[in-house]
Length: 215
Ligand code: IMP
Figure (cartoon, helix red, strand yellow):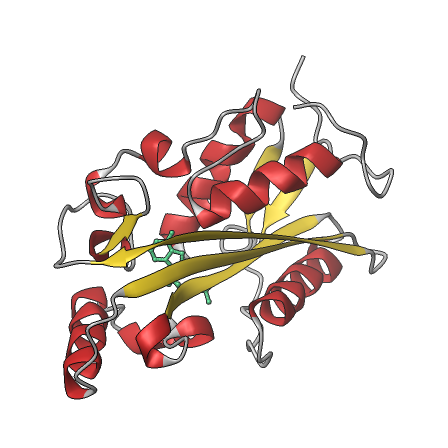
């Protein structure tokens, strides 16, 4: 966990995790645990969910982080993430959550990916997850960290994780994210400064710049 801070701003104390997604909240809390950060979620603070009007992951992450930091008067993290399927021109991409609808029907969203691939007669099953992680301070200062993980789409397997995890098998692995424990999915090696999941990769970059290990 070494490395010089890029901005000179170190994070400590209380931080808002600007998400109303329980799966992402749990992952962020796990990732923050080694740093002694007191993480409170936007949902717990009763903060409204801003509309994600951006056309890129980074824009939507900044909208969420800045809104939470301004409303709470605390530094805030937001992750905007999604699954990009090569043969679908990057869809669902920033619409990954919306493909599951208000009922958060990810079985349906995964079935839609399969049916759209079939509809196009596509045999290419390459895909990647993207995580854009933005850290915003109440004075408007922001920092962006991005992580990606590449792999193949397979038939749904496993019930761990959330969202599209069951259909994503990362390169170099036999199991899908849905078949991995949270630790395996993050795959963080602090000494090497590496991670496996898109969110872990973005988080390792952020931690090197802005976090100090708990004493
Ligand atoms: P967001 O809350 O707008 O960033 O929505 C991201 C959506 O992308 C989630 O609701 C999931 O559908 C999908 N997604 C992002 N990260 C992951 C992941 O690690 N595993 C599975 N699905 C993910």
